[in-house]
Length: 318
Image 1 (tube, rainbow, N blue to C red):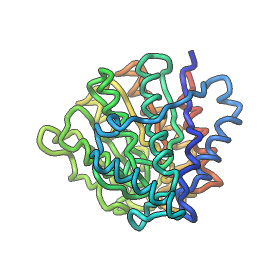
Image 2 (image 1 turned 120 degrees about the vertical axis):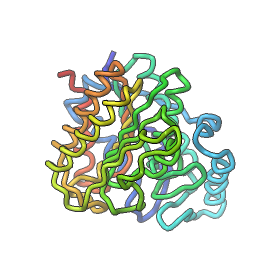
Image 3 (image 1 turned 180 degrees about the vertical axis):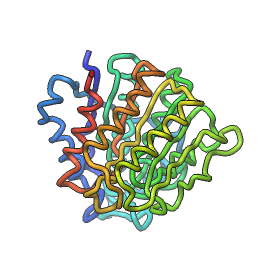
Image 4 (image 1 turned 90 degrees about the vertical axis):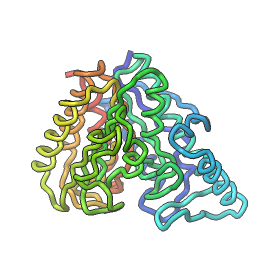
């Protein structure tokens, strides 16, 4: 058994965004780098994913919204053009199919990890997902893969789910979906104030979910040392009160010092440290069960190697 499985749907490129920061080249470059990295050839297994079904998406998204994305993609196909859903988010003829397979890849990753066929998995998912709300696309995102994965893990019998989001942008969609739910802990470290404007320290959940959201807002220019200190302290605070049965990572790499859409200062070595910290939580509380899902990261010159460093840290048995 390979401890780490990798998924990269061939449909990633069908989501055609045109001249846009979130381009198909991100997934292509990442997938190629992962396949060529000598550290990963023996340590990782490439899995084949399926498309998500409507009823699986509907655990977090409104059925009417799912139909809306399908219809928008169909309109784009008939009119042979891309449609703007908001100033940042576009749909092309192949976007619905790409989004179904991105979600399906994450669901498959949860299944293989849940069955014990793998300890960890990483998914090159495109389009990204953590800004997508129950009934609204935003921030480059159509379907919220990590939220869908959390509900799928619960459907498989894993009651308590920890979502760790280290994208430079706050995962407002994921937070909103679980804000009143004590069975899913949402922990995010992100630049603040920054798009989408959410993620203050005072956003900590509501109702039964109060105390099960923890945001670590960090100012632009925050050093890697300060970031890591705050992240580790926050993760400790999470596990002091919540012992997960399954861990999910919204793995955005736009907090990298070279990224054009953020102003934080992390390097590849810092993402390795973040990976080891989260992996240690999974090892301690849930037999290592961890699925990591690509979110942001927009510097094509550095993103592939950063992703490889993250996956190598996941696969490291030391």
